[in-house]
Length: 402
Ligand code: PLP
Image (tube, rainbow, N blue to C red; front, top):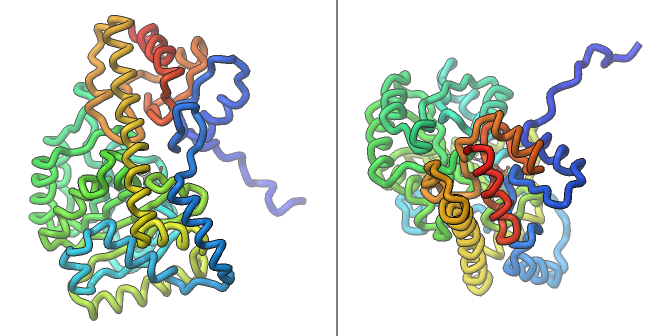
């Protein structure tokens, strides 16, 4: 008799399931627009030149492989918070940000969830947008933190339901946590405007909510990291104490290196010391200390002036490719196929993902008739679109929405 005979088969991850189905398809025109990773115009993964050069510099230094401290590489941590909050931001100048290097965005969220579970009043709920990145729900539930949804996406306009969003946050119990996608909302690609961020800030302040920013796409959305940090900096400039999960997976293309950071803005340097001591106590039994290689690379790309300059150019080129593919897709639909459907949301949305508004039945037709693979919620990764397949994708969208 096995110890595990009662373990049932779990469901496959919906996104990874799409990849599997794509791999099995032998059709020569097959297209994968499910995966959330950048692809170049030939559909290939891209390693940035700035990253390759950083790797060369690191190799030349002939460094050892000793453990990092629990909170990771100090020079990375310092650079990461400057990148997110701005080097002249009050919490940095006043030395009141507790930060730890972490296992990319997901690991950062998981530490944040554990911190909430341990240090916020029992029963504190985390409000997440509806819909949100599916893993948010699992991260919080595995940390025994309850989530609630606030209205976000409006299927009628394929845009933001700002009225519903403000109403739901207004009705949240005071002192709840609100999870905010700093930019390039996943899965919808719909971000609040600057005016709308100001309205969200007002409710967050009135209700004394704790904003937990998930910033997985800084610089990757607009091509300008300062612009993409607008929401985070608006909140910290207003004096709010935020939590931040930061990832360098997308903007540096360091996916598998698992490099990111988790930080908490505190009221004073003394409070920061206490918070940081507790972060260390949380992290130690989770994974002891974070990986070395990604931190070294990201640190070089952030701190070396030459590499940094090169990276910012490459980052903008990645963002621009996505923006151009949105335009191309829309233009094929409207100008070549004369679709009468409203496709303006394709270019109004931002970031890697586009919520097409296609129904599960239409997504099934895309797969069965056109060999185009995406998740059944109608989300496409625009990174999977290129100058060779855009017309084919547009034609298929037109056929299933006629
Ligand atoms: N948060 C959001 C909204 C994401 O879209 C992602 C990646 O898809 C992440 C966090 C975390 O990614 P990673 O753990 O690879 O940094």
